[in-house]
Length: 155
Image 1 (spheres, helix red, strand yellow):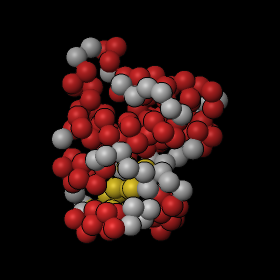
Image 2: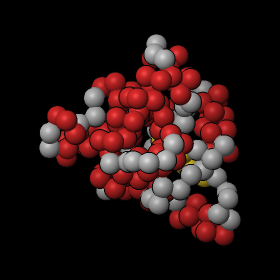
Image 3: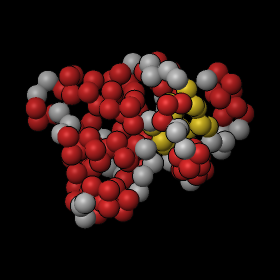
Image 4: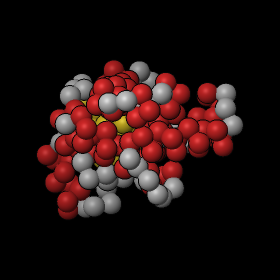
């Protein structure tokens, strides 16, 4: 993580993909703080096929953030515990959509995967973002803010 941060300090446009065995939010926070795009934190156990690593690298190269689904689920559970009310908790459907967005997936792919129309996916995502306190911007701009919010809550 220290080396990755030094590289991005010297070359801010460089994408970073961290492949780790550590799920601890402290490690995730260290690389994701600041809501920087072009970053990924993936668990080794999630990379059963080379095609998944290629997808992650391509997403980072396309200015996206990618966060491992196990880490996302853990952070959303933490958010829901802290929410204080069912209205502030992220629902199962919102979690599915948010998790796929944080994996760097496109709305069309998410809709196809979940059997929903793109407009429905966008509405569910907007609801999840609102529960995280992420407002304004478009979908691509909200993902780094959502990651930042989840990281801040978990660390």
